[in-house]
Image 1: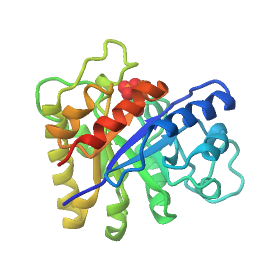
Image 2: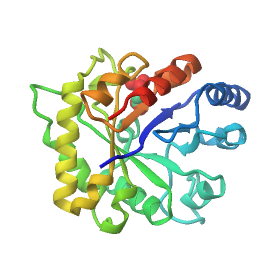
Image 3: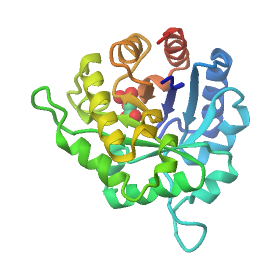
Image 4: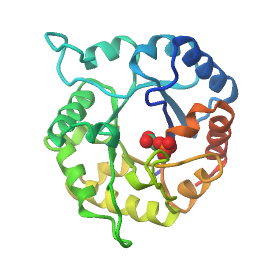
Length: 254
Ligand code: PGA
């Protein structure tokens, strides 16, 4: 089954001004090609969604978080409804940097369901904090089950799952590089859980990799790791590096 590859720039809380955000997005736009094989998403901090959106032509717009309910008395929250007005088509959910600050599986589940029901693609992040040995820890299965509780089978193909082991994220203290082989095992593990739960329709779910991905290692994760793309943090803040990463991803035929 052929799934379109997807490369997502997760800018986290960077850069520091709307002007710099627009300039970075513009630079990335000028270097990427419109491709049938690779979709590019840029996810800036929410105050910069509008200036970034104004310069995007080939890349799509992503948010880094969402509130599951409609507009109303939810101080500080940004609703799916407001994201839709800004033409946001993707939204990261359950990133480990949010889980660590108190986002629970229940909140993640509400966000995933709300996004799917309102036509925004959730980029659901799962992954263990620590790794001992070769086996994918069962916490990955638990996070997946909890996030997808009550999700209707008809929506499942619109999901993107990111396997992002926390120990491989570039800003984790003593981060260590992951291998395409581990990524492949995670891919098989996650797809099996999805297919058991939702049937063969779940083979359409894109399963991508996150954790210190850059222009030189993307090939291994896509080719040997059989991942459908990547969630890219640090390397997405450097236009040249990110453009090369996208081009390298586009060059891989599967
Ligand atoms: P990194 O971040 O590419 O800098 O490791 C990835 C992420 O946390 O989404």
